Image 1 (cartoon, rainbow, N blue to C red):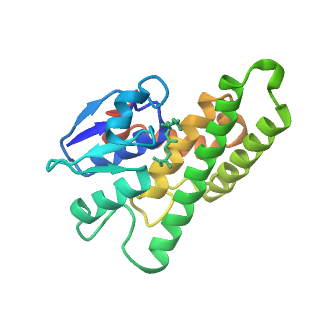
Image 2: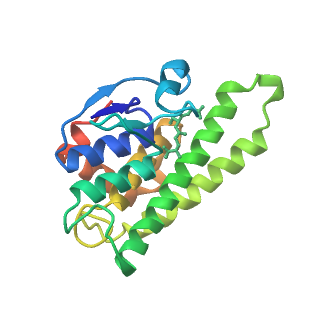
Length: 201
Ligand SMILES: N[C@@H](CCC(=O)N[C@@H](CS)C(=O)NCC(=O)O)C(=O)O
């Protein structure tokens, strides 16, 4: 199995943590969506990371579809996203908020990095960052009781996506330690666990 993408990408890191949590062996090609577009396109016509090439040659794209497949094959009776009901909905809700937060954070960063300074529209950047911040703040309050995990007293995709979103937020200049201390602390605790530690970029 080959994971295509760099762990600096929150979406790729999410898949890498999931693979490690399921103890799946894989190789990784450290390609970036912008820097290695042509190579990435051989796996994903959209030119985005991550992609996961399965042992039989089939290629999965988009982190949500990839982790869904990993749950199906490796999740047994305790998949990282529960299979049914209220537990599944609760985990998917946080995962959607956190992946949406990453989308907004990256839109702001792409605008900052790819648009010439004279064409930059600061209100758009501010709006993206505000959306990201509100989503992260909602998970920060959920983490206020200091539990090791956000839901179900065990590791789920809620924790993994919160971890990668907090990391991205810090990377683009949001002071999560000061403004979202519960989420910051959750991420620090998770980083002590092997799937998180072993996938540090
Ligand atoms: N929804 C996708 C988002 C993937 C994504 O946006 N990846 C970024 C890297 S962080 C990328 O490849 N960007 C290059 C581009 O959009 O052209 C997922 O969850 O996998």
